[in-house]
Image 1 (cartoon, rainbow, N blue to C red):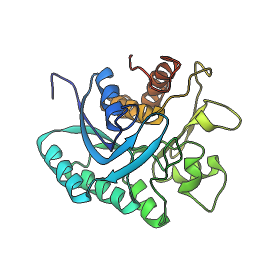
Image 2 (tube, one colour):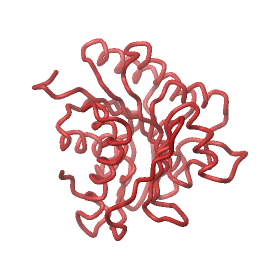
Image 3 (tube, rainbow, N blue to C red):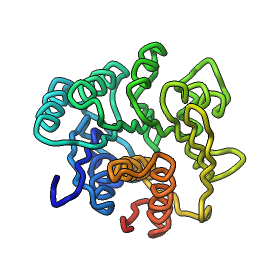
Image 4 (cartoon, helix red, strand yellow):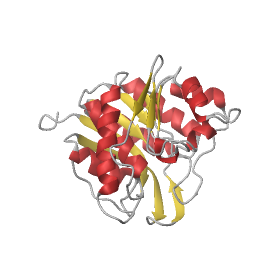
Amino acid sequence: MSANRPFVLTIAGFDPSSGAGVLADIKTFEQHQVYGFAINTANTIQTENEFIEVKWTDLNFVLKSIEKLFNNYDIKAAKIGIIPSIEYLKEIVCAIKNLSPNTKIVWDTVLKSSTDFDFLNIENQETLIQILNKIDLITPNYKEILQLSPKENNAETIAIYLSKYCSVLLKGGHNPTEIGVDYLFTENQVHQLIPKNTKCYEKHGSGCVLSSAITANIALEYNLKTACEKAKIYTENYLLSNPTKLGFHYV
C-alpha cells in the first residue's frame, strides 16, 4: 500500500481539458486520499463545450497495462469509462477478474459525450448480461439506461431488471420528475439519494467525477450505499465550485 492509501484504477479516455476522463478521475482519487493508477482507452480532441475526435487505444495494449499493474499492486477497485465496443469492455472486465477476483468494478456507462458524440452502441444483450454479472455497479443516467435495454422505455423498470445482475445507480441529473434524485437499485432493495442542493451549475465530466468518487469510497471500504451517498456530496460540491463548465475539486 502506498503510504497506507489503497490502490485504485481508472480505465477511461484522456480528455485534454481534464474535465472528464482519466485526469478528472485522478483528481478525484487524490482528494479521497486513495492512490490512483490510470490506463487510457482513448485519446480525444475536445474542450468542455465541443467533442471533435477520438482515437481508440489498441485493446492488447490496454490488456498488457492491466496485467502489469495487477501483477504488481493490490488494486481494491477499478472504474471503467469510455470504451469503443461491448467486446472491448468484456475483455477488460474478464482480465481484471482473472487477475484479481476480489477487485470491485464500477462501469460508468458513458454511451455518448455531453456534446452528443456517440461512443458505444449495445448490440448484444447477452454479452452485456455476461459483463454485468462480473461488475459491481453501473452508473447510467435516465437517457443512458434506455440504451442498455432497447426493448423497454421505462428507466426504473430497466434498472430493476439489470439489478438482478449488478447494482445500478440511476443518476438523477436527467430525472424527468425529480431533478437530482438518484436511485440505487441492488438485488433486493431500492435506495433514494436526495440531493442537498438542486441549484447547481452544469459541469463537464460530472458523471466521471461521481463514478470515480464511488470507486474511491469502495476502496476505502465503505458499503455501496454509503459510497454512493458520499460520492454524491462530493459531486455536488464539484458542481457548485464555480459557474463555468470546468469544476474545481475539493473535499
